[in-house]
Image (tube, rainbow, N blue to C red; front, side, top):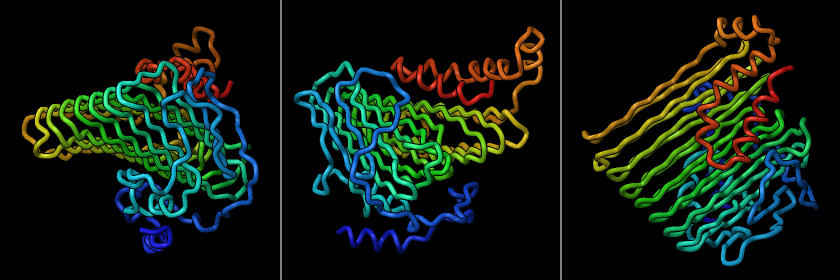
Length: 388
């Protein structure tokens, strides 16, 4: 399909409403994606980073374009083009916002690590929103060839804390036989920016995907995370942490799809909410009839730090095989008053007590993150959101 066809496709799809099952708790009334400008940026802006980390490759992206600062020899780390044969194979134009991205994206990144190559330092791209009331369409395509091992970090941020905008991002990840990819996606956009993302990975035979997702910014939107366990022995682990305050509304829609036998998926998301913030998580484990010996787990835990904060947690299972092990758990709870009293009775202020309780709440998530700078950055970002 041409860009014009894709744009027609986007326009033909209605904006989701709360009558749509997957949008039941996320109301988009008042939001018009076509109201945001294409912008006239001329310079690639660079927002401050949450991470202090040594990288093998570095790229900067904003509305004005993409700049590759460095890349290791032999690794493809370059602007993505319309002609790539894998473009749109995992995230096409079936859904409104994915179709908008495929029709309008301008700046993208292609990452391909050759067969058998192992990288000690991560590849890193920073995506910055810098123009008020602008629409930003970003796309990344990552290919981990057979037997390769590396980390790729994608960070989204705003140049100003009150920047209004519309962010639409897509990631397509291909992990070939025996490869291992650690993919880190962190979102710390302005609380005046609408953010929609469609992220999908396919994991081949005996390959491994270790996915870390961090959500701290944005106004409202939806983030889709899908893992296809497509080859026998494939493994995927998704670790997520989010924090929302003010009137933020975070929505995560996740799918662990088991297509082959002897596959394993492990999903754990935790979030804390303050003020009038809301969070939605809808998670599905889907096991196809030929995916015998599947081992799948998913959990979502929410900690409410105010009486007006609210979380909706909706786990689900669709199992067509008969020799599987699939379990899930979901909780939404206020801070334990006994724990709070215990800490404050020993001289801690309420803020210090809450920080200690929240740190303990997230510790299991932190322990799952292999990259120490990522683990430290998430800890710092989460604790900074709790008042002194």
